Length: 77
Image (tube, rainbow, N blue to C red; front, side, top):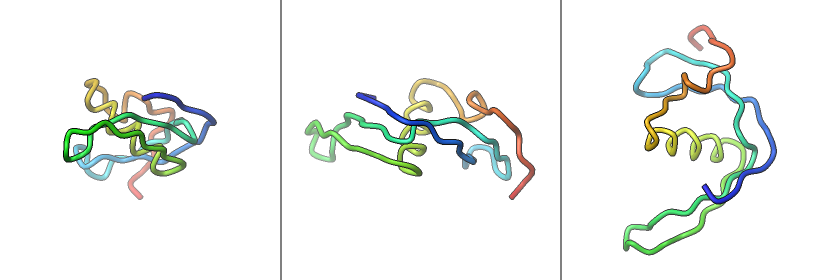
């Protein structure tokens, strides 16, 4: 992640944990660096839900799961 700003409270789940949901605190906006399908470096901005998704998926690459960021467990939605 190149940069992050703001704060948002999110409801998160994960396909690896069916029917389990938690509240998390995530950045409101993020900028990430990645490679596209041609192996070229790209810069992508994400806000709100996309920022949450970028953070969630990048943490998987670091061996973390959304439960590591949980501030409150929620009942099934």
